[in-house]
Image (tube, rainbow, N blue to C red; front, side):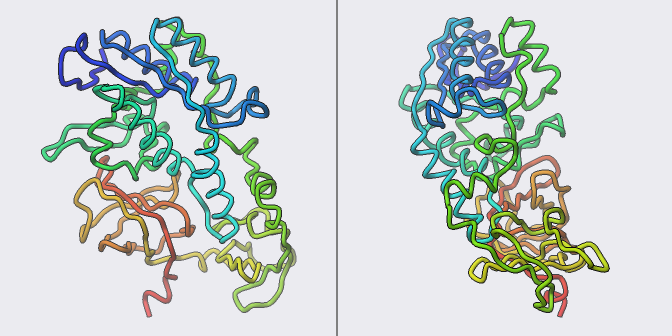
Length: 367
């Protein structure tokens, strides 16, 4: 049986479960109910009640709310739905669009966890006098000598620790992640054994409010001024092409430049939003030795220490050193984009992270 690390016997405890309507959070709710604790399921409505109702690949929309309610009914637990569409748009979707307009590459899943999920929802759970808030994230919360620690999931293919670096120590103390030690296959098998109707439901996409991965169309809809055309230039400033808007690019990108007649493949090296200019160059021009961070959150001793850093969710951790405000890579790192998160690890433990504000090119750092 999954251990929810409750402070008292389960029959004397109350667990609030964040239910998105997917298989993961549904299994968490079932495991919580099976523990013997009182369980309350909460679903956040993050979209308007129209367009998102039947769209595949989303979460926290109409169909998902119905699925969450059906699971709660089957388990015999209370279930509440809260309309957070306005809050989600202001704190996540609008910030997502604005980031692209300024030449940054946002990570909206982190901002969602920081805001509506681990601030508002956690506050509601406390108001209910719950002993913990449980979610379906694939990470592990482990007891350490100085309190709760955040660790990668046992299944590397499902690990979501990168998106949870901004979790504060106080939040981590209250949160529970029952699926962190399980493989996705096992979770689906549990859902089928428990008779949950979502057992075979497809996973939601990485950015739930971006249909078919076309983030540029979302930005254009929210910020029509984003369609301002501009130049694509090489490292010497020579015009080599044109673009429809800087929001269509991110540092390290190769596809989509549509610049022909070049002797070598070109990548997006830099975005200059005020000039509506995209700077392209060979891969070696992407080499970064250091990055300045902002809004750093620490979950362990990382300041002044050697750490491993992930600068994208799918990137391999790179050896580096953190000095409190910036990271310096042991070897040049590629595709480091302002707006992304830099997350620190030591082994499987998450030590924290911060947002990449700017970068220092390898040749400049070495000079």
